[in-house]
Amino acid sequence: MSLQFRLASRNLFHDRLRFIATIIGIIFSIVLVTVQMGLYVGFRRMVTTMIDHAPAQLWIMPVGTKCFEDPSLLDERQRFRALAVPGVAEATPLVIGYAQWRLPQGTTTPVFVVGSELRGLGLHPWNVVEGRLDDLSVPGAVAIDQTYFERLGITGVEQTAELRDRKVQVMAVSKGIRSFTTTPYVFTDVERARSYTGTPASKASYLLVRLAPEADLWKVQQGLRDSLGNVEVLTASEFRNRSRSFWLFGTGAGAALFAGALLGVIVGTVIVAQTLYSSTKDHINEFATLRAIGSSSRYIYTVIIWQALLSAIVGFAGAAGIGKIVAAATAESALPVIMTPMLTVALFLLTVTMCVGSAVAAIVKVMRIDPAMVFSR
Amino acid sequence: MTDVVLAATDLVHHLGQGAGRVQALKGVSLALKGGELVLLMGPSGSGKTTLLSILGCLMTPDAGTVHVGGHAVAGLDSEALAKLRRERIGFIFQSYHLFPTLNAEDNVRLALDVRGERARTAKAAAREVLGTVGLGHKRKSLPRALSGGEQQRVAIARAIVGKTQVILADEPTGALDTANGQAIMTLLADIAKDPSRAVLVVTHDPRILPFASRVVHIEDGRIVREEAVTESMKKVSNA
Ligand SMILES: Nc1ncnc2c1ncn2[C@@H]1O[C@H](COP(=O)(O)OP(=O)(O)OP(=O)(O)O)[C@@H](O)[C@H]1O
Ligand SMILES: [Mg+2]
Image 1 (cartoon, rainbow over the protein chains, first blue to last red):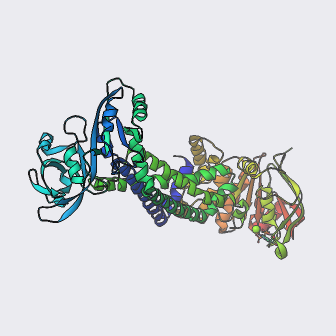
Image 2 (tube, each protein chain N blue to C red; image 1 turned 45 degrees about the vertical axis):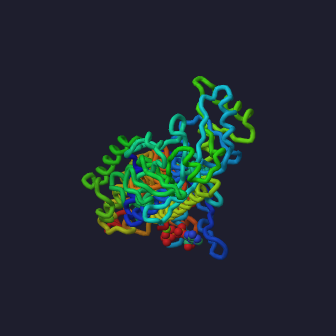
Image 3 (spheres, rainbow over the protein chains, first blue to last red; image 1 turned 180 degrees about the vertical axis):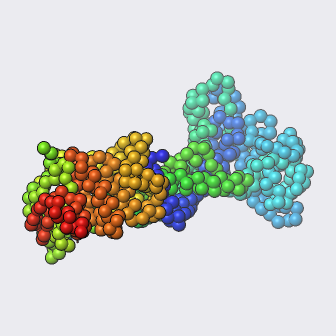
């Protein structure tokens, strides 16, 4: 063990109370950053769930559509023009929109209806745990998620409720299809979705496009743009990016998360800088002695930076532990805090940077030492 | 013939600012030869500590020159001065200045560690020197577990472990009783038996006269008298 490391650790542990205060400060700050960034990662994932689960390679949508939940409409006749474009194997309508769900007891709650073709290219519920997807073809059949049973007044398949005054029957139940807007999704076929949401028969929210084998994505995209006019044609990944940038930055949610994280970093930096500075001040005699007996400034900075690094490592370990607990506790919620390995590494580097950056004040203090003071103390 | 290991010429130095500014040194010249133990004596405020700080390259004089081992100190930046100190000068302080969180061995090893010496060699050297000062059995003790005399012996071990040519000590016996003071001075006198090394000790204490080869008297920033210590002087102070 190097003497510099030993000096650093002794300086740190010598004053236990201050060390504990430092560690709590780091944990507090890094947990704050972790939660904010974990929410950011979680939010990023949640806002694209529907796009991720649709089997479309290209999405045709009205000009200016901001995100999947944007309920603007296009003309369904575009579908036939799309099918005529070389390389397009399938183009099917998708109808989305809000509707009022009337519980058997008579109260109502808003739901988000997703209607697509049941056979072929459609956005169907995944993770079905009760009932069968095929049964959605029965008149009035819908699929909902377990999560929303209570909200929708349902306890299992074959139970009924009303959507826009029409009787519906739950024929399939999925598990884990949660909406970050907390409005329950209700899956059904295109025609019924139109009637539940009041969408005219000739309109659709999207056209989902599947390519013919070996067709070139970019060429087909350009071909669709040229022949359809007045619509937007996005690849799945372009649509994901657009949805994310709308929800994360268009709404200010992302900015709020980053601002929270920044606040955490500032609080952490101030606490670590303060405790490192006061520790250095307490040990100023020793640093002056080191300088007097001829240590280089680098030798002394190394001691201080070791102190910062040790604090960072201990603090990060604590924060990561709490982060894991928070992630586990929110895993089943509408907006989970997600800790990816990348995020964990980034947070560790942030902690180290924060602590080492905080050493600047202490280093400036040490730089000003007059080694001749060793004779007068 | 022995070499001059430390030489200062016409040192002038001011301390403080404004109305509190005093001329602490008013033209001091001094040379230390290998094999000498020189005492620097003088009343309080006469400039002893100031002179020691300049000789030890901890302060740069307003005027005058310092040569350490034949190298001129003028114009060196603070990093170069630190290098000069770790390679050529050992320091001993009245209040020891040991590191309270390090044991005796690590305290001694520090003087070699700042030179970048390998841990294994530094440890071996630290142990050996602690044996020399009679603390071989206490090398794992923290300073607070040691008596004042023992702490000063650890500090001496730290000052001599690097085998520097010059040892500078400011009142090394100031906080010690007679027996411990004598033990410390015996150690310093032993170092000065090496013809390539010199020891300068600032003191108020006439009891340590017998250990010196020369006494330099300073008053009001000037050297007023220098005398070789004769056998008769040693006998008088021993009586
Ligand atoms: N930082 C300072 N600012 C102003 N004056 C100072 C300062 N340090 C010392 N002095 C003055 O400079 C002069 C020389 O001081 P120095 O400490 O060298 O004396 P000394 O011989 O070591 O005294 P002592 O025996 O008390 O240790 C004294 O008059 C002292 O008051
Ligand atoms: Mg003094």
